[in-house]
Image 1: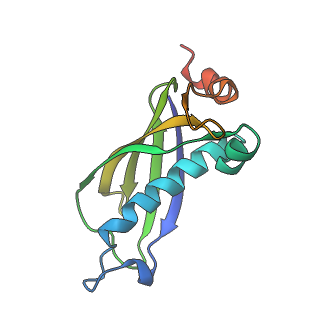
Image 2: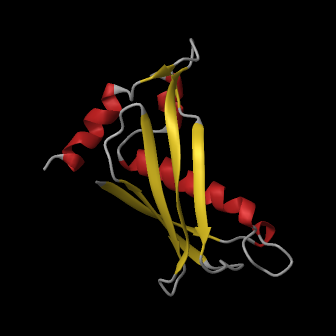
Length: 137
């Protein structure tokens, strides 16, 4: 298992008229968690696309809303990989407020696509190599 935590402050422009984080922005917080998890491994989405020629489109997104995040809340985004990627990669995400209360949880599943051929491919070996030590038993 590999996990990474990052923090995001809810901005005014992300809220609805009730002062709650607008539901459509939760997916963006999930994306920040994914990008920062990869960055913590020394890799980025940009390098994945430009150097490895691999794209990672989203296949599915699942969420459950537990309580609202509000304007100016500092949200901790906890992103976890529970399995070593093969043909797909699933990021499990939980968002917590400053009181450590669960705000939202879910998962996002992505696949790997060769940028030139636009065909599905296996997880890049360099990514698996970076993650393998965290999954060794």
